[in-house]
Image 1 (cartoon, rainbow, N blue to C red):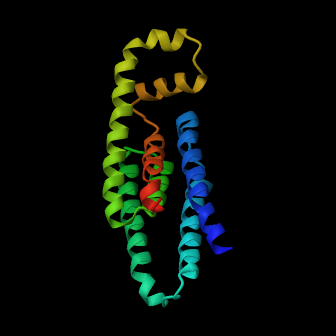
Image 2 (cartoon, rainbow, N blue to C red):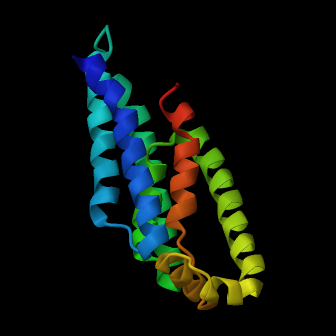
Image 3 (cartoon, rainbow, N blue to C red):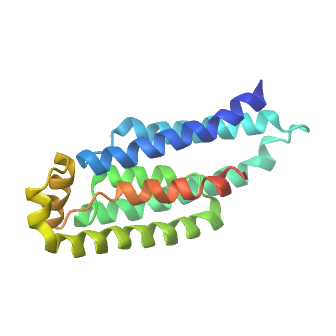
Length: 178
């Protein structure tokens, strides 16, 4: 039963990450329940992993790994809140980034940030280059969220939750050792 529950965790993680990314792309909002769900899912996964370990190690053995991930999530949250206070990112992006970073581990968080940076840069460059064709965006039959995306981009706002979500999806094989 524990192995079945543990096998569902990557799907729940992917669902939450994908929902947050698409929500930010379409409405420039990431619901709080997505970030809180990722944190809760991390605690559930940690507990189930501890229970499923054949030799049931003491909590003192597993606490350092768990504490390192919590520390990483906290440090990322502090830095993201500083970025939010300066107006670089939104509050939902800050919470979402911290919640996804919680899953990465000490080595994975560096890879995650590199992938995230590359995806955010690619998104910004794509919007910058395609903004020159604004007449096609406004005259065409594009969905309303695409027009809103370009309007927000003109105001120097980007849905950073989208590259955060894509980077987290890319990291799934490493997070869950698939």
